[in-house]
Length: 204
Length: 204
Picture 1: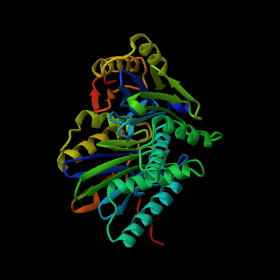
Picture 2: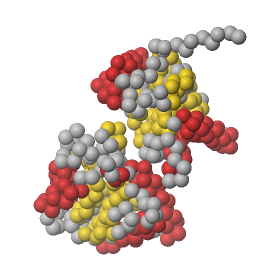
Picture 3: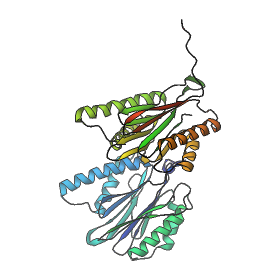
Picture 4: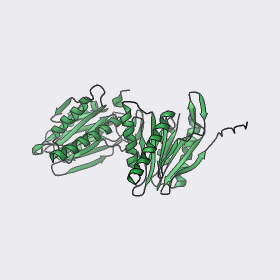
């Protein structure tokens, strides 16, 4: 089994009209065994920037701690929050530092940039950025997620419709992947508020 | 074949571990205590390679004590768990420890808690956790019978159910178990569950 499939994960981020949604599954497993069904894969960097980390859970935790540290230093020095594009570059650089002994993670970054323009991107475990205008996916369920998102996505969705779309795409994809699932965690972020919701899907 | 499991009850946390020290086909001893009392209100139940287990848990214990000497107040359970994870994570890509840990503790402000820490430094706060081949049986038993806010009697009954299941269904089941509990009055040994007693040493 690949080291990326050791813990199991599913992540998706989608762009809407002046908003974005980022969603993950909730399973923490050790190969075939499920350890927990309330694992947090998405973390807030600041009010307008969210980071999801799929792949090996220990590296996701280490990487998250390193990135929060770097962002807090940035906030102290620059006296402002990092732009999503800047943060994506930071993540890419930190991952490439470990080019010949990498973190086994695939991050998904979603944020609201200047003029409240939503920004999403993903990268591989050594920092190759993949910007997208519509959606990005990561994790063991990524292939199913690509299909589900491609068929369900529409341009310029309002937050409520975006939430429905992301939720349906996530739940239908993790149902085809034995290593991810046990519910969902969806954040819908607009310039004024962050709505966090839990999904109840097939609990298996 | 080492079995370690634990759960969180009403205002206490209980952990149980087998007590056999095995090398290949030989059982060195069957009264090896694998649950260390980390400080007055914390327990570390560890399983894995015996050298690493003893050395790593003693290292954590001494550092937790050092913090208390330097700062005058003890670490919270969450802080001790995060410190333990940090040490495992730092060593992971240099000189990894093969130790799985269940860290149980009681804090005045937040009550009882149980932390699952993998040998590759995956940290997660759980209500019930288990390691080893015994986990297939003990986790299943706990999934069936566990509910939040269990009394000590109910929890020990569940622990006994898990031990009975391990004894009857695991091919090389460890004969003896030790149960330790931590609550507002501190961390202490609760009971032993022995089915094989070491023979008394003949006098010279």
